[in-house]
Image 1 (tube, rainbow, N blue to C red):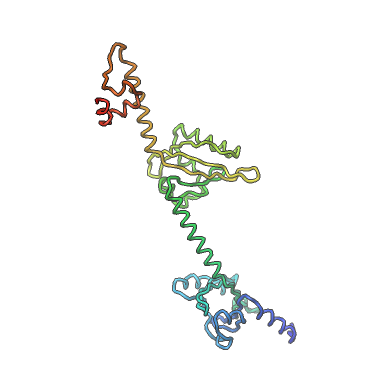
Image 2: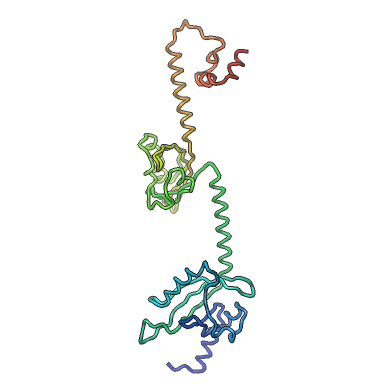
Length: 306
C-alpha cells in the first residue's frame, strides 16, 4: 500500500484531534508515539515524552494487577485492558487503557510494538465510589432495623440474603443456587407458609404475614415471621422480596402462656361448685391468663389485698 502525503495528513489529523489518548510503545515499554491529547493531560511535550518509559503503574498495590494484564500482550489474543492512576497538572487522574500488540507478519509470536488508547474515567470512578458509599450507608440503615431482608426466584432459589439472615441461619455468603425451603423443618406450620408463598407467586398478589420454623446450620430451631410481596412484570411474577423477623422468644412466651391458660381452665373446671374462691384471689374478677400473670406479680397481690 502506497501512503501519499494526503493520506498521511488525513491520518495525522484523525489521531491528533482525538479526545482519547493514543500512544505507541516498544516491547521494552518506551514511548514511540504520543498524540496531543496525551501530552495535554500529562503536561509535557512530545519531545519530552518520546523515548521515556511508559509504565502504567503508579503504586505498589496496582503492580501485580497491571503486570498480570500486561502479560496478555505477549500471547494470544495479544490485547488487554488496564486502569492507570497518573499524576497530572490537574491532580491524580484515572485512565482506562485498551492495548493491542502489533505482531510480526512472518513470526506471529513476535511482538514488534504495542498501541494503546486511553480514556479519562476519573469522574466515573468518583461517581461509582459515591454510589458505593451510599449503598453501604443504606445497608447500614437497613441492617440496623428489626426486619431482615431477602429475595428469591419463583422457583424458590435465593437471589439475595441479608448479612443478618446469613448470620442467623449460619449459612455462607455464597452457598450456590440454594432454595430457601432447605432451611425449613417438618413443623406443620411450614406447610401453610409455603402455600401462601406459592399462592402469591401464582396470583401476583400479596399474602398476609405468616410464620415459619427453620433450622440453622448448627442445628438450632428458630421461628420467624415472614412478610413478603411478589414482584410482577408483564403480568408474570419474576421474583419475591420480603422481610423476616426472629420471633423465637416471642412464640415461646406465647406458647407458655397458652399452655398455662389451658392448665388453669382445666384446674378450675375440675373444682366443685360449692367450693368458695378467696376474695384475695386474682381469679375472682379476672380471666385465667391474668390469674397466671398475677401469680408472679407481688405488686398485683398487694393491691388486691388492700
